[in-house]
Length: 112
Ligand SMILES: Nc1nc2c(ncn2[C@@H]2O[C@H](COP(=O)(O)OP(=O)(O)OP(=O)(O)O)[C@@H](O)[C@H]2O)c(=O)[nH]1
Ligand SMILES: [Mg+2]
Image (cartoon, rainbow, N blue to C red; front, top):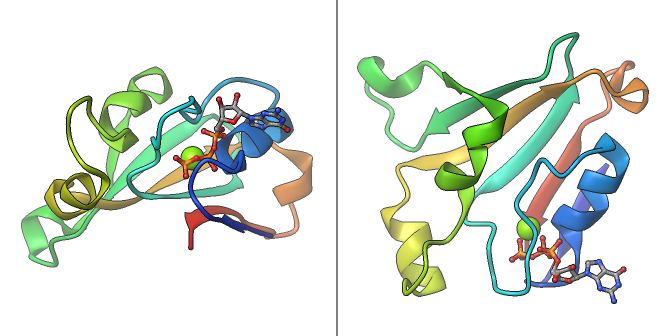
């Protein structure tokens, strides 16, 4: 399932409701700098995918789910375009024990 919409339409809030917890940052200011992808996984895990293609950083980097916010959020005082350009990550892959995703369904939180 692709959750696609213009900024501030409640995409992240919607996905959080499905996850049953406030995992993706969702606030009143434009906040999601990168794509969020949710897949089924037994244990909640967040994997950051780098925009760089060199071997050192090409392997997705696991981060604590609780610390996701600092990686995926547009920082205060930064414009949206700047945040997207300067973010070293292109997407976060969130593994979550969500029944809906068991058959391979993906939730994709992406701004259009
Ligand atoms: N009234 C109302 N407000 C909502 C609803 N869903 C989300 N919001 C509010 O809308 C604001 C934006 O929600 P987000 O989930 O961050 O929106 P988003 O589409 O992920 O935003 P970006 O990632 O910045 O593009 C937040 O302040 C939410 O509390 C809804 O169904 N009704
Ligand atoms: Mg969002």
